[in-house]
Amino acid sequence: MLIGITNDHRGVKVKNFLTEYLTLLGYNVIDYGTDSEEPVDFPDYAKKLGIAIQNKEVNLGIAICGTGIGMSIALNKMKGIYCAKVSTVSEATLSKAHNDANVIAISEEMDKELIKEVIKTFIETPFTNIDRYKNRNDKIKEIENNV
Image (cartoon, rainbow, N blue to C red):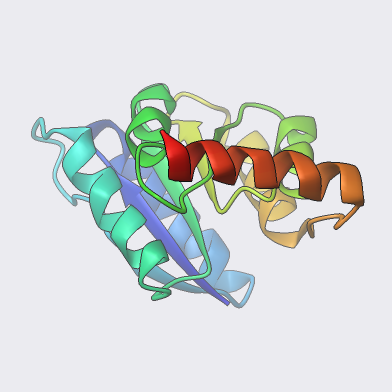
């Protein structure tokens, strides 16, 4: 599985930590973020990851910024990108199982052990494919296509 990862200046350390962790788990990680702690504009890096997902260069994405909120807002403006801003293992599970999210956004301020658990859960949780969730996700796609 190919996982894209992106970050702004505040997420550099977490990106490096996660890239090493995911590689140890056997995942291939493609980096779309900055390597500098000099201030950058997070939407530029969110867009790089979003385009990679749209072009099927990666299967899933991870976005890291100060809070995760900015990245999630930017990514959710892109067609076909379904980004969940996640802070707990339960949210990671439900974002995939119910909402079929293809990107997770996290805060660089989260505890590293929690980050590992949240990210592993997000990657490994399948979409449940239950009709009520498929119908709800189809309604989201309808809004995306008609607004």
